[in-house]
View 1 (cartoon, rainbow, N blue to C red):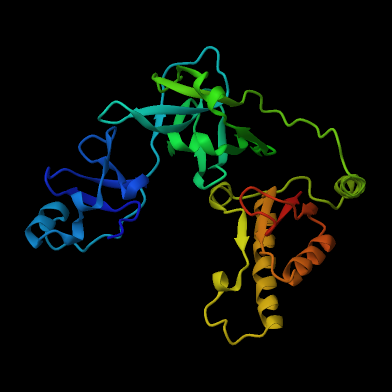
View 2: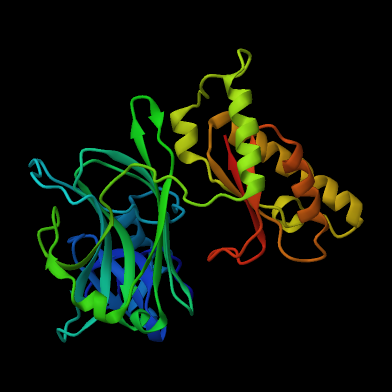
Length: 347
């Protein structure tokens, strides 16, 4: 039986209930208990039942008589906050909290993003290794808070894990320019970083991701990028240009800055279409996505086109070269997409 993340379950023998929040090795599941949300335990599939498999009387007790079965939703990430003013904030920190098992052995860590500043941020986060994608998050980070990101296994330390972190500070004037970095996590460095984590108040292995939020100027710039940026600045100085780009903060926060243009992701019934018609449909979706990103003031997007014959990639490049709101774009290796996506910077 396959239990998806977010499935509500009941233990066969203890009558405890909870929610599946992750997958472990050897076919085990991680379950967060309803009675104690701070307590998470591993379980074999044979030891638990989904609510829909319980008898009518049990289901009525759990759901209430006459209620229809609810579609399970993924559990929300926990956010811990503090009422105390932090005198010496360190910035944004990545913390790995050890989670001992019942035998007191540590095989996994709870990953937190700690913000001990008085700023709010939009966060894009990817934790991955040479063998698997571990976890990802796109969230709003509150002031003076700790955001739960997910679980990290001890074995992942052997596979050269890296964390990609991108943030945008939220101000009264809007969103500031994005900052991003990639943090390489190595075992020796990891185990030498144990200290009491702010806000959490527990021992954790910690890494400072950002302690300054000013965008550093690029020291190197290609001739093509330089020329194009100069053209943009002239345009921006003209009396007819927009002085700012208004956006809907709520729509901006929920906007997913990537689009997958594989035809099966866009429409049904594509099997009978010829290649020209497929590219036309893909370009229509791309243009709609690009227009919305520009309207919202999104600074960077990813267009997933795959490898294939390259016709779609070339068509996208031709469109981007002509667009006045495109600062630059590149089709280089990316940890998440390989060479199958074009990264686009917008003004």
